[in-house]
Length: 197
Image (tube, rainbow, N blue to C red; front, side, top):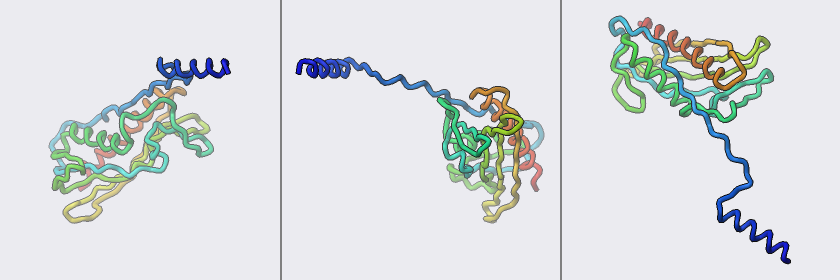
């Protein structure tokens, strides 16, 4: 009886003092997308542009920094996340690139509901690291759609993709490679938008 009373007293004391026998949670590292390089010179060639939130490939529904192994298994880098959901991250990244590129003007997001003629939409199929026989590579694929909102029709579409080797088996190296692959896709996308009649 005395032993159980003593044990109960210890448990009660630990609760009162805020002590815990559980291991402390490791801090989460949050990562952002670096701004894409843009061609900021030249006159505006496309006006009234808005950017929609992209649809996402299945692996990106995790809203984590994703790695896919050679067997097709989907994993997330531990203790690391993007600074926001992947859909919001990609939309804001495209908006920022369009704002900085002088070839485009009157930029807005679809959420603002402005009466812009052109909407950039699409599906982000991949923003992930994939394991291959040659090593890990960062893969970015975006199926872009340029929609004429006033005519209510698809004006043009194109798939953009890039792969960049991951230099080391670390989260930071994975993010750096994903940013580099995204920059390639972003440059291709903006050039395509500017050249599409």
